[in-house]
Image (tube, rainbow over the protein chains, first blue to last red):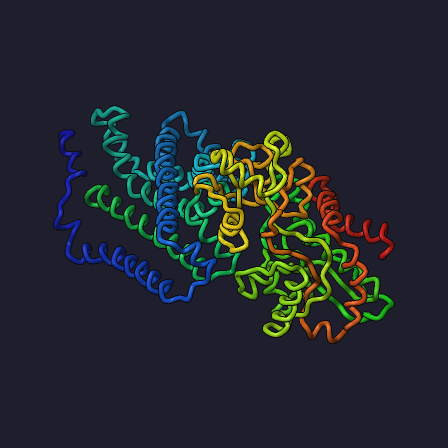
Length: 259
Length: 310
């Protein structure tokens, strides 16, 4: 068995991965979401809006808030990947494992602390704005990726790793060719959780001038205007579902063949 | 006035939550309200805690069994009153007008505003308003005093002049609610003929606005509440609303009409308290809680004793 044989793990057989039924399943979600957005648009249009509702529910403002929300979520998710995956891999290496409980403990605190509290404390200590909001998002959402990276690598069959080592692979090669590919599905499941947390927590970014759909939701809550509140909440949910669907596609794409 | 005041310090937050569980002494005593029991609601900020505790103490003095109970948010408090979880709480004319009665245009004259709210709430919702206090917890724009002195700012017209001569200086911190309301930012800018670009309007939470306005990095001007104790503590200058744009937010006890019909003397019991509460008094009391960190119940009791009401 040569090293090349291991590469078949990456070989994609389109027929199996994208059968007609799978394709239909994958297209269901975006179709539904588009339907929900159109339905929301129609419903808001049909409402008799008063001046407060008209002020908040104007197209440029909504598009602006949605894009800000996506931006906050995207930047925070990328940062989480850049921080948590290397850290998770590092913590599974021999000699580093004793650090794992501490790292997970810290990440646990981040997820357990109320996001709004983290946000306001950071704002008090530093300043307000998008950067602080993103920092708070990362603190709140780093745990799932970190935990799943560690778990994903730990659950790789030890016999496989031993066999690979026996074939003369260096620890680095074992990591690249065996451990990471087999851990990818678990890692990506963690990423999906992280993205969903980010989308939710990004709604409180409004409190420190970082925009997002929280602007709309909070205005709706405080002025008790249902159309405003529903618009903000539904759009937030649509973003969460869309990103989760994208991550699902990514997972499908990166999953090693045969798992 | 509806907003969640997020006190930045964990200490204050802890103190505030501990208040939630505070009630009056149990057991009714002698008096015209003997046998009645009341839950007095408070929205989640100090002024409301103080008012609710004062009200509960006066009801207890007259033989009722009363306790103050903190609720999060104006809407929830109002809902709790309508559903019977609360028997009464202090509401503000402007808030009821805009939020519950779904009006968008405030009435300039305070007495007319109060009468309109009282009448509409009685007709539509069977909610009774007792006489209102003098204090006015209205919106205002504040600025750090040294900056106000440097630029010679005393009124909102001065701010409009500054925005015209030096547009970059007119940076304003507001809550998203203030940005949405008719009696909020857009109406204010129209009334004073100001033009402030969107990127100079920053949306923050109430508690953060005070500290940021004091720092002056994020914004030079902040939307504040007139009776807030932090205005004096942080040495902020409130710009006078010289064109009388902002509506009046006078506080008054509200309850279901049925509650009042059962014991109409509640109105007479609370009248002496209502008569004594003006804006300065409220600022002083709020500061004792928000700035000095005293317990709202203690502040309420001490003031009632000093005023000879207990």
